[in-house]
Image (cartoon, rainbow over all chains, first blue to last red; front, side):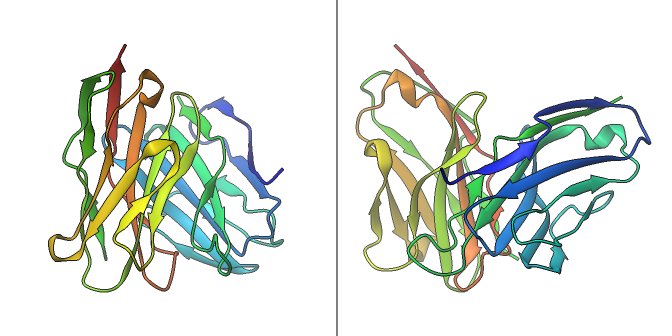
Length: 115
Length: 114
């Protein structure tokens, strides 16, 4: 089954404790992206990657890092989380060719709380 | 960079009522347009998309959207809503040749009363 998976689904942590949210897709998609969803603000892009070893900042990259060492994986790293990073995070992927190109497939979301 | 406006934050309808959710974008070039739906506790799913061609696009579950280029709009419609349509709806826009800059609207929460 074609899917985007994220782990963990729920995470409560404390300020300053480094964490990683994993994202993996099994559709051989070139493009992957991270968003955060906050009430009244919709989804805002944090980082995206057009392919392996190619990443770039989205609208709200401050406080986040990403890496793309393999095509299927795109982890989101919070080196020193702060309470304003409490949010719902979504990973997405899409292909760049074919009938479903540019359609983004979303993961189930990770709800992060930073106290 | 492009931006997306969704005019209605929360819409409440009775079953069988007709639905229209507004979406306007600001971007001068060619665009790809999308509507996504997020059911309670679930991830976003694609309802429909417009890349080119017929400006009236039909999607899943009886939804359709019309692209009006002169108005920079891509409104979502459904003739008769059901209770199961209760969800949050997001309009999204990306530049015509790339998807690395997809912008989402703030979302419209739809509540359908049985």
